Length: 347
Image (cartoon, rainbow, N blue to C red; front, side):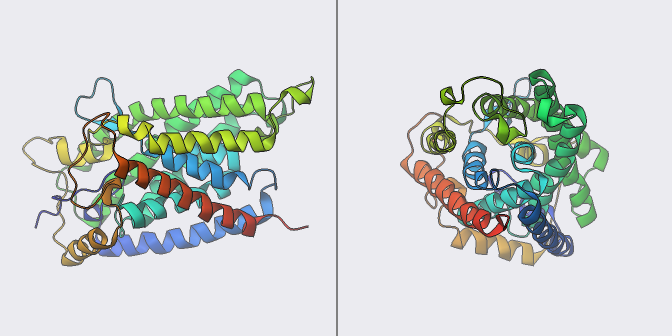
């Protein structure tokens, strides 16, 4: 069986991994997320932990918006969000937040394979959060007095390197699984090229959120508030409400206008042609096929739509997609709000 007939929507599918590699990465991620949760519990300030829920909801909703990549016909990209979460919440809380987002996407919407969940958390959460945050702080310098241009530059560089490094992990994981059918250099170069372009868009989105929070609540960015009347700045609740409202609008309405083209990963291994190879990977594992069928059967809204529904046309109102987006946004918000209360630093 060439197990690429039923690709999942955005993230790594089960077919990209062998069962041993999938099991090893799932175990490793469970340990990493547990350590990150413990570290966030003791290290993060109370003013940032409550943002986990609303920022997780925002990133979940933003990931539903695929955009066509210029100069790369036939493919699209979407926000990853790991670097943004690390900048706002710290790398430990960012990893926990991204793990919750990816679990919701996998279990409710079949977005990413169940066996590939560990790799997806590594590639989209652990690598961007850790590597992106290190680069961000290295370029930023002392955060309390950082100039705006320096903070924006740091966010751009962190996104470019963090997103691309996470994407580069996919060919490594595929070749470790023994499913790669083309030279790793070919697959790696395509993945890096596509995700370099995606990272520029991710940098722009991250720039916009950082600029907004820097203006309205600089202390959430680790900055010293500018001198002047505090009364003119919106309250913390207003900022949180604005982010949550944006997330719900993205999930319920803006998702209608998302590109229907395959995302960068799916295009790289399914639609990009490597010489005479029809596909980049092949997986004959019956267990992988069984997990695919199980996930398809039990996901309530696979691919953010009702079961067996044809994909909607661009800009066509789709109540099922809106329902899926709002449901996922609220579930992510609820899970992360509960986690943030549990992790909140005790006196």
